[in-house]
Structures are given as C-alpha cells and as structure tokens.
Amino acid sequence: MDVRLAVTSKRDSRAYSGADVPDEVARRILDAGRLVGSARNRQPFRFIVAEGEAVPSVADAVYVAGNVLDAGLVVVVVVSPGGNLVDFDAGRAAQSMMLAGWAEGITSCPNGISDPDALARALGIEPPERAVVVISFGPPRRARDPERRSPEEWSARAKRQSLDAIVSHVATAAG
Ligand SMILES: Cc1cc2nc3c(=O)[nH]c(=O)nc-3n(C[C@H](O)[C@H](O)[C@H](O)COP(=O)(O)O)c2cc1C
Image (cartoon, rainbow, N blue to C red; front, top):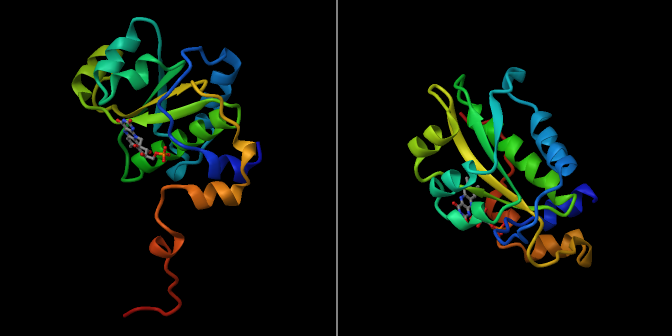
C-alpha cells in the first residue's frame, strides 16, 4: 500500500474477525517496531507478544477487555527508563507497527492500561521497566478496502482537527 494511502486511511478499529494474524505478517509488524529511530539510538523499548493464557490476563488489565480478547495478535510495548523521550520512542514504534499491519490488511487499536500492576505481574515486567500501551491487531471483522477512496478523501473525512487548528508558522525570532 502506498504510504500516503496507509497514513490517511488508518483508523483505530476494535472489531476483529477472530482470525489469527499470520506468523510472517506478525513478524513484519514487530520488525517495523524494531526499526524505528530513537533518541541517541537507545531503543528503550521491547515488545511482549501475549499468547494463550496470557491474553485474558492482559485483557483484564486494559480498559476494554474485548479489544484484546478478540484480537489475532496482542503486543505490549514496554520501556526502560532513560531520558524524557522514552515514551515518544515507544509511540514511534507503536505507530510504525500499526501502519505496517494496516499496509497488509491488519487493523489495530492502542489500549490504555487500567491496571499496570496486574499487567506487570501477568507478564513478569519488573521495575524499572514499565508497560506503556497494549496494541491489539487482527484481520478486520468487516472487510476493509482502503483503495476505495483517494488519500485526499480519507484525509477530508477523518474526525480530526483541521490543519489550520494545529499548525502555525513562525518566521520571527521572539525575545
Ligand atoms: C494512548 C492511547 C490509548 C488508547 N486507549 C484506548 C482504549 O483503552 N480503548 C479504546 O477503545 N481505544 C483506545 N485508544 C484509541 C483511541 O480512542 C483512538 O485513537 C481515537 O478514538 C481515534 O480513533 P480513529 O482512528 O478510529 O478515528 C487509545 C489511543 C491511544 C493513542
């Protein structure tokens, strides 16, 4: 999929078909996370794939359990401390993984963690490491065809702030 089409058509879908994400696709998704840049190339993240009996425990630790229970691939992004850009680096990895999945027809949604202690216990995450987000992936329940609209149409339809609202141009040096 063209990058512009992937970026404009990606939405955070929570409705999965229940099918698994094929192993080779999961590997490419995880590899996209591995490859992102990070502050001083520290790569302060790792990814835990929750499988089998771990999945219900992870589901219990996020706000909407069903997002995780129905997913075909569950990835927990974990960071180790070091500077104030660790969460930014984790976000880069998360979005790259979601876009890599979307480019292969796999939809996804980030899940906020409602019970970090329970999640850490379930997955054996010890301080100073910390789970940042749980990403659920899966083939979409309803067939998706990003090609049915142009990138410009996807952009115009997105429930997002306008560019004018969030972009300003500054050409003078203040102070
Ligand atoms: C850090 C983060 C945590 C999120 N947590 C949840 C969540 O717990 N449950 C959920 O259903 N969606 C969650 N979302 C998804 C947002 O609701 C979604 O990004 C937003 O509504 C835009 O959705 P759209 O891309 O479908 O328009 C989360 C998103 C982010 C970035």
